[in-house]
Image (cartoon, rainbow, N blue to C red; front, side, top):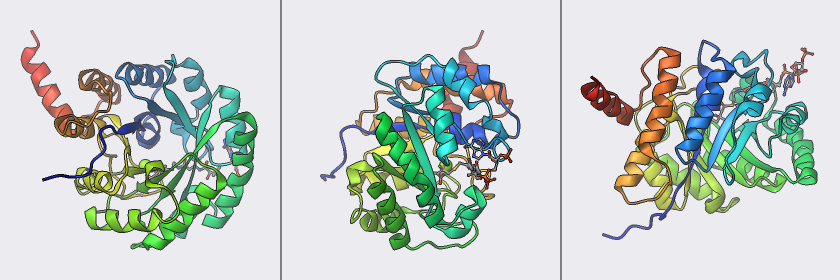
Length: 307
Ligand code: HMG
Ligand code: MG
């Protein structure tokens, strides 16, 4: 049977940001830097390194500038950071970021909890960020959270997602990432949301950002790939969640994503062994077992081979 699937997928590794923002314990900058460098060695094209947000709200990433300054960038790799406003943009530019991401949501209540603004207020906040990016030749990614459901409001209409995605696209973002913040999406809602969004944003500029609460993330990846998406966000080891979405569990684990794409013959450029090294080192630092299924097999094999 023939299926229309991309030959190559660009994986955006969000573990250092989406993963570590959600840890109870603040990981020291030196370990965050080592994590990003190991991810670089694993072959990612795009790593989301940190966030220049308020340290009062997300103390886990208060060291964003130190982390950005400490990593060893490799040519051709994009190292990005979240910025919620112009102040965050100033901090990111001062730290040397050349690619930033703004973030809002498709549901009002989540957005109020997350960034203390209505959706329209947040879009207004992003206008000077986008202007500054244009002036300085930086790229901006736009995130839309709660595209498949909101922890406070429940269902979210695909048209509401398309409106916000379209508004970000009109601001000049280079791609729009659609977040399933609490992991309630399924292939049916993926098709519906992408169909609505495709009327406002070309699907080759759309990423999906999946949390794996109910184990549906890989099914949702397949639905997105079949719909024309070829950019997938995921998190090493399945680290992650969102501090302002109480029911959000870990992100789709990058190992599980890459292992499936490898098996399907879809290229990512990522070395699974090197990626597992990065995740296992972070797992040791955190002192807890990360949820990736693939990683559990690597852990088992390495334990068997250990002297
Ligand atoms: P605010 O407190 O409502 O308002 O913050 P403010 O703008 O009046 O600022 C208050 C204080 O924060 C001031 O300091 C500002 O200077 C400072 P004070 O005078 O009290 O000492 N401040 C900042 N400091 C550092 N960097 C900044 C910054 N901006 C203001 N950029 C704000 C509003 C948006 C800043 C705050 O609510 C915030 O930082 N929120 C962060 C939320 C966050 O990071 N959430 C997680 C990321 S989103 C996510 O995980 C979803 C995603 O993964 C997709 C998905 O899964 O759906 C992307
Ligand atoms: Mg997320």
